[in-house]
Image (cartoon, rainbow, N blue to C red; front, side, top):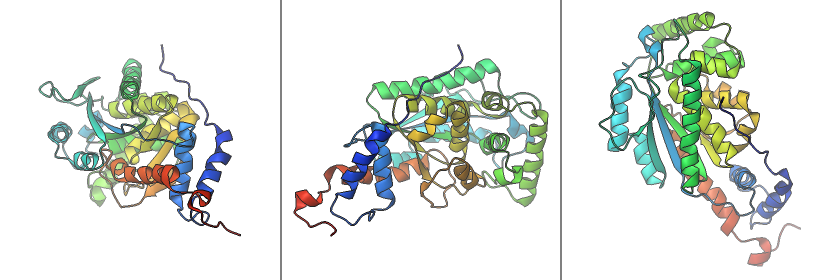
Length: 346
């Protein structure tokens, strides 16, 4: 059976009561700025005047891309597996930031082109040893695409059942900015040059070659226009798993934190499959990767931070998470004018 979920619309009837609670705090109207919008959003997602963030989790999906054989990355494919080892050893940026803020971190082998069986702490969900080279054929089969979507959903459900209600997704995969650019171009119809960035650090001539190669891929798969076919022909296993994960998290009513460019490309597919997923999303930051700002604009999204980050891994989520904590804390714990005996605005 094809992967599908039902996502309930947010209860907009609660909006007025949430706004009233925010406005009655001991402050001028709107004085907490974007934190007020954030508190309102989390309250609507959780359908509560007193929302709570429970057992926050970031799932990092790792996979390789056959398209790297065409030279679209400055780093060799072997780096994907090496970075998985670094994640599991606790040495990556996402490990540091997740530990700092008390966020559970899970690492998933979605399709790394290496034998990772020696890592018992890794979630072993490998679809294949990397996707096929989309320059020559679809990146994955229809069955592989459906398997990846369902796996992402199942992993989210496992966290939901364990008590997590706030989740985000990260990725690791040499070449995945190329896959994300392809998805973005095909589904937004923006110029390819606007969708394609330097990834892991391409110089000007390498970037020009990357754009030329991606145009060949788009020409090769000109018939792939609907979201699922675009994902199957142009995407990656980690992108497909994140797509399923986004949809299931929204179906569960979870607060979803979105990271950077590649994760937004997965969300773009998810939104084409079920637009209601976007109501559950909070955007952590604006990536420095070319295309992310345009993609956020396409999604009508406002990000919390702009720190010129472009690391991936879910790092923007971990850095932004304390802002969600602050938003929930003021909504729940800050005194109202009546409680504090402070005169409100005349």
